[in-house]
Length: 125
Length: 183
Image (cartoon, rainbow over all chains, first blue to last red; front, side, top):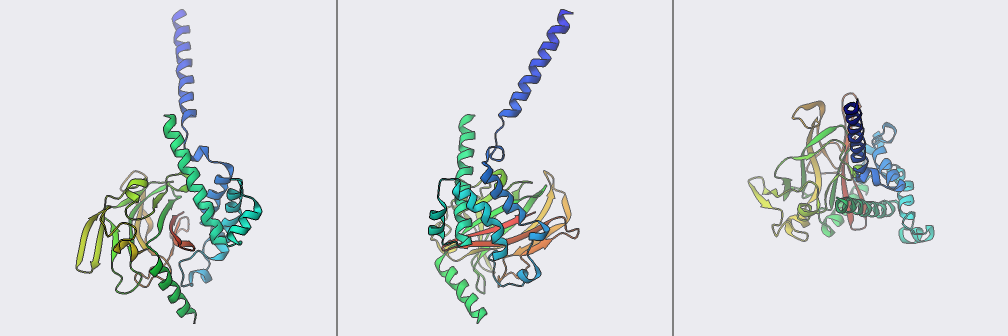
């Protein structure tokens, strides 16, 4: 009986420790801010059927993402920029509302944050 | 008029800037296996710089998971990218191809190859994650739109329509990023 108890306790301990291990696995994916998450989703959504390039867009002679599709990235980009403490007025002043500038700025912020998370994960280990 | 403008545009971007950043976002459940070519956008389209060993971007490796392929330039990718390329296959003409290490003087930012090439196309085939088994119907040659050297489409969709791939740029001033997206 005592033995059984002991082994049950041991099994329980083992389970708990395994559980902890799972929760300690941090990745860029799990540690992203909500604004980063939305920025990702926006980029990924370019592949959704309704967001794919239209016949008209595919006839263009430029490699640049079309304005219609850039517009899909702008709200999440703005959100990400504002989340760093930049004000709406600053954002407008710096970019002049230019979609490419907004997206590129947000991408830089995203990459920087992503790098920071990666470094923090490394130093935790 | 439109044509002249776009030629001027390409010329201006060519003269001023190097190949720019390449990002590969693989959102699929398959591994990307292929090559990416940076080349001169004017006939005869040389120099041309290709990865020397196949690039593999595993399933679900993208900016969302922090595991996208990102090559800021031919040199720095070796130290900063998760997918370091130790050497590039550099062609200066159809008959002259040389393997150059990542830190070769002509490949560094400001070097001849760096200054005269842009990311222009990718030839790839998707495989089931962690295997060598091709995903039937999910392989293609794609190139940026308006590429005079490789006239492949910039958008590809599998016969079933379930998966697609595309190549595009996002440009702001001097900052050109070329995206290869696999959905």
